[in-house]
Length: 600
Image 1 (cartoon, one colour):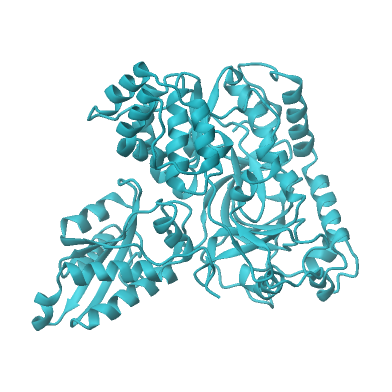
Image 2 (image 1 turned 90 degrees about the horizontal axis):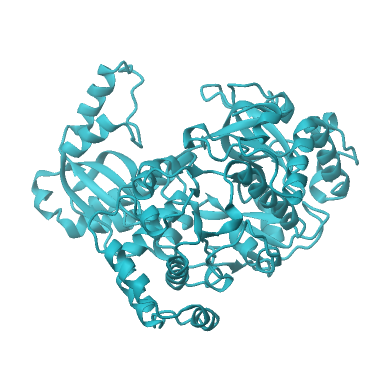
């Protein structure tokens, strides 16, 4: 990405309007003074929260300078904060972490002990998030002209929410945003008009929401200039939905009547106003969707689409080839970098190739520190506290783990994201998202680590022991060739001779379900409520397969003494070797248990 002012200039020339000009000036001002903005942010956070129980515990005594903060406040993980979070969740309203009252919890896609992490937030954070959103289109308008001449077809959804024992709502950050007045009563902006009405986005039933959003997208197909979802996986789910439901959608368009499965009263009323019989459009939908070849379907149905707006960094990169196939190679724009804990920054060159995406951290969002990421170094101890690096002092080419201090009351909190510095815009660094720490498998917003997978395999093995078998070796991968994607686990079994015949499909499919029941609540919600993950698959491989895997690794230079079976594979030759040794495949026969309530 370009460095300096050039990142905010483009062949299109100056900003398209005064509002954009103001937003771009703000980006320049923040990034030119990154270090002093960071100093101010930290002082604001520490002074307003000086009397909180947490800061008093570490005897900060009202100090707001970096030196005192760094010497007295420890770096923490979620588990360190869990007792305080549990007290807030149970109804303790005293200023534990934040002087401002905690307004709700944002549920993270990361989990702790199998449950979503609860991130405390305060009301003003909505305005801070809204500020970052307001910068996205002014940047995009520099690269793509004419976005005020049409609409965006965005597949946006709310997810289920729950209440903590103390009465606070707990829900994902985007659900919180879509349900807020910032979103629901947003002022008209010609550069940010969606085909989906609010009633469709806010419908809690995922089928009715997707159906009506797709229907509206088809009705306004010629006005659509960009197609998007939050994650790449979400956009592919929408394409799959169209493959399964185009006949009914075409029927509704032809007759001007709404699918009786849409029962939500406000959504029905809204769609009745929009839907009018259109035989020509219905014939078009049938002629395109009934073809066997769906290559380029996005541009065939929405011919004026200029780009896809989806996150394709990190685990989502696995979906890039499929998006290319369905879109005819349209640019894939990654516009911003955010999480439940904090919104971090934006991509100042949104039309770059997915592999080149770098995010510029906006120094006004929180106080950022960076833990040098040295995967092979010894475990950090209390006696040798790590030296965290400030935002303005990171070095190009180095990798760091992100550590944040937020207005809502997280102090030196390890987010778990590993970032690589690619350059600077003015004095603000730009980062490539490398990966989430310790994540092995991910299809959508789920994140399964090695310990969770091991636990799931142990539970399957326990079931197999009743039939005289056990799991000798295993590995896995996230199969994204199916929509939705699903987890594939390769088992090599140790089977007693007299037990071989008793291991039929029913036993192994029960093993699949036993594994799913063992996985975290984000995975199970993806299976049960969001339909974003398909049934888990176990592929049995021939005896001796994992020995062949080791031989292959050693032939490529691995040390026989240090060789460990990889618990997740993505290297094509290894996957081809495994698949060539598969003797049978088995799928989970039903959905695992999931409810919005937390297991407490």
